[in-house]
Length: 131
Ligand SMILES: [Zn+2]
Image (cartoon, rainbow, N blue to C red; front, top):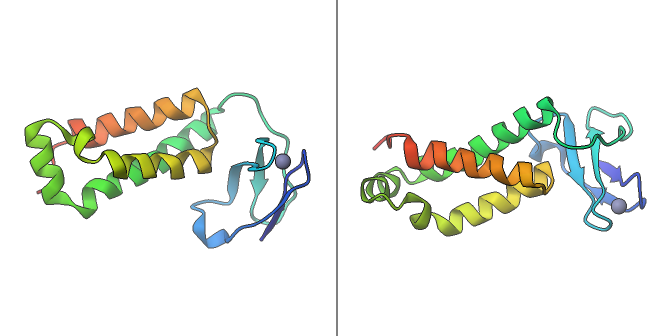
């Protein structure tokens, strides 16, 4: 799938299978323009300022999936760190990678950062581990 930035015309090739949904919010690596793209076949649609309720829901879903995976793949390590109370410190490098992926997908903004922080807090620190 080829995507062209509506502002600077930089072209990107993306694998549609790697995206969880059809309507994507993308950030151009060349000019930093944030734009939406309908992966079902239409041209990019006009960017909207701030984060719409729909974008916010999507951002929360992406963050939840990424953060949940960290705990799910290593339940014993999560449980031990949770009992010690240093979950965030224990998974610092995983969280840094997850956050990079998250911001690449939803676009960098203060709101996006706080969505990720909120999800980290809710899922890793507050929720009782499965193990
Ligand atoms: Zn661009």
